[in-house]
Length: 204
Length: 204
Image (cartoon, rainbow over all chains, first blue to last red; front, side):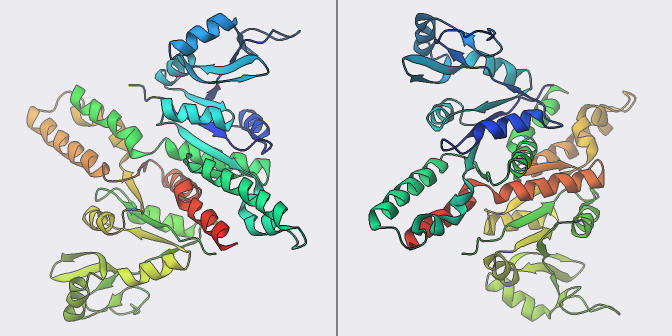
């Protein structure tokens, strides 16, 4: 019997280094998950390959998928759609393989609504753990600057609340190690494995 | 600000090797948690030290602690009480240190009621993952034997349902590694760390 794969969602504030960490995870030893290829309506550039870099689709096709509830998440940037088609993710999970998504926080929010049993990992800037010094600074900044920093920190923390895990990106190899431990651990969660045992007993 | 420690509870069916795995964890590198010393009403044996091997107490003192709700878990074996005093566990967690309990399933059930936010790890026999062959055997056993095995397997699986994680004890070093990953991962759970960040912001 195949155990269902895990949907792993890596996100975090822009500039935190999500892409770098994702690449390091895929380049590292002992990982065994599929990277989900995004779909877009923008034009294919020279050297890009359909189904490798992106699934290239027309605006009409993309909007039809949105209408049908077949986009796990999507957004529009500079007049083009970008998103994750649900069909591939669902099929891969059903085959018992883990799927890894590295996406923006707005996309992660949509995924959380559609697939709440995913593993949601929030990558935090290293200085979030040193909030005080980051916000108050050297004590020479005026109140307006401090207020603006407070606002950003507050927003980041409230974003984090939607996630299961907060991983500090202080050093890429350390962040990678933490994320891999999370994935291994999620695989031994009782609520993920007990169904398999129960089913085995029923089938005897 | 000190983050609260984790209460880690390792349990599982008798004979699964809980004690061996616990010892291997404490002997391994990079662990940083406290082992909770049990309390008992049995007589001190030669060489045993108060507060090291056990807290030795009279029956009256032990029962007074039970009455006061000050035992995290306890049981009676052959006329003597054995249990975990709550005060030490609470104090250690408040100091930001993790506490590791290795106890029988009945005790783990009591801990789950008193401290549901603990990390509950169920150690499973390696053959639980090969349920079918374990139960059906070589096909030469009679129905009564198979039924008895079914019953035990069913009980183990239903015990497991109370836990957060199921770790297979196929090889002790592998089980140790899995448990250490679980502990590291639990430390980066958003619901455990977000309070710290929120409090930092409030205090600014």
